[in-house]
Length: 339
Image 1 (cartoon, rainbow, N blue to C red):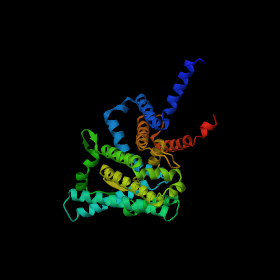
Image 2: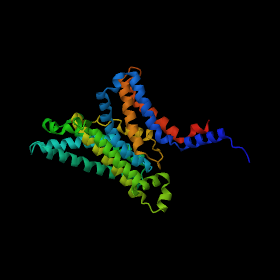
Image 3: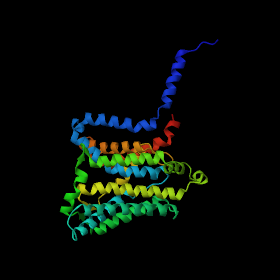
Image 4: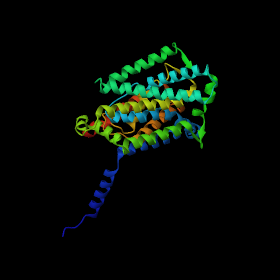
């Protein structure tokens, strides 16, 4: 009988265990831990409870939008209009609430009306993007690039080139939505967590989620498998619009205003969060919790830039752009072939 090399068996066992580890899943978590340690070493004020709370709260806006973007990208689409859409929805919300203030006393009714308008606009904007992309047979890049310019122009026109400000009395009632907390956790963070949980269930535990994966992997095969590709894709854009709406609802009370600068580069940050989180830009693979980590990582990077003089915080957009390029390059796997 041949002798068994225990060392060889041990090596194979360890290799098998390593192969089972999903580094694509663990990557964003490991990156966040490393970034957290780096932030502490750069400036010990980084772990201050106030600063950490600020990071979580600020990441909520991009994170919520990025959850919607995860569905769009997983199904093989893209949406470049989310930042401009948020600015447009914010402006209309404020105009509606200000107008209602002239005919009724400030109260929750006005706030609920603004929230309702936001949701309706988000659904409508998402549907238009999805409809033009699927039924109109126009590339998603072109459709959302066009709508990005339209929304930004509309909010600029509505503000007459300036800023649309929420009535002070109405803002005083609305203000707690951003600034208050529940059980010590900021309300925007709680909303972000709720959206992420719902997004995870939709993407991983429902037929709709499986259809998103199928379409992103191979659209033709999905069609032959009786998947309604157009309807599913329209739903992903509507979901994206709803997520933008939710982010807008908790963003408006922060500054109480909207202008042409509102939501600038949010589309870049949302896409970056999704890609950093492990979702494939070409579609077919998406991770909600990875997206959550991606949003936190981006916010932490911006926060660290504010706490150090090593790199100007004005280069935040450049850093995000580099991260997207590197993340997509690593996803392609070309670097593995060159080894």
